[in-house]
Image 1: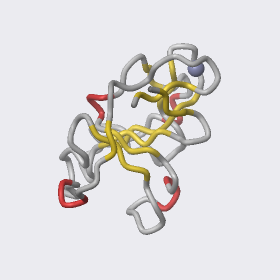
Image 2: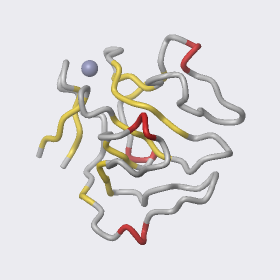
Image 3: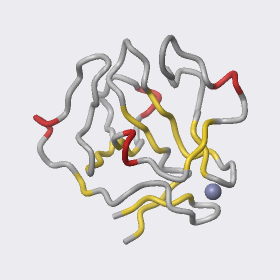
Length: 120
Ligand SMILES: [Zn+2]
């Protein structure tokens, strides 16, 4: 599966498959939350309630994406904390999701399921 922007259909992820083994998720701060090549859909009891329903991928699996033009969304200590709304856009500047890559959190990209969809 790949993920594409719902508005312009541009691909925003490499090939990813659903991760069925939650033991492979890593909650250590500053490290990758999910291995490359996989995705999960966040349910209720996750560490960021505001990201419920998001599709989580490894930052390395995000492609064709820029940072948001609103710098108010790009806060963070040494990375991006994603606390101010979606900070990633497709190449046509449509919101697609939130990169969380700051030192005090596990690292991942949370793609908003309202903004992206799966494709073969
Ligand atoms: Zn787009």
